[in-house]
Length: 209
Image (cartoon, rainbow, N blue to C red; front, side):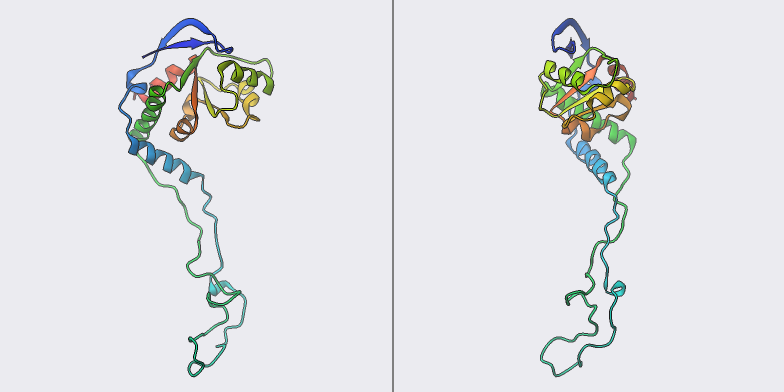
């Protein structure tokens, strides 16, 4: 699969690159994508939610009324969850939401996500860029040149470039990552995936193992 290389103004440079069919041209596995995205989102959860149960509520423990003869249900403590101010029944407790997936499945999920974007013509290859200083307006100009202004986009760098990363950090809907931090969730969340030329070799090496 050959894709034209664009410059930062969105113009064709006249060059083309070959995208590996083993990474960008496979039959997508939807369930692998689902599991990888689920794991990514689960790992973002702190799991610190907690509500007080009846044993943790401050209050009297005396029996609030006699057992029989009232015509209503039995009640042993004002801290019961059926009373206002009582503990919560079956409330949330701190827990770890993360779960394990094997490397081959995660690799398949990323290749499936990239193949989906390739099928949708949502992958753009751009020549490598560098800014003299981190300026948001420089990155905004790149977005406008590529026609991605106001759209969710994911830019993938070959190596860490602080000036490019910092220039994009204040822009909502735009994210810049290196090829080693590419995730299925970020690929699927973007309308367009912009690959810098320097990232292609790393992506294909990481996912072809």
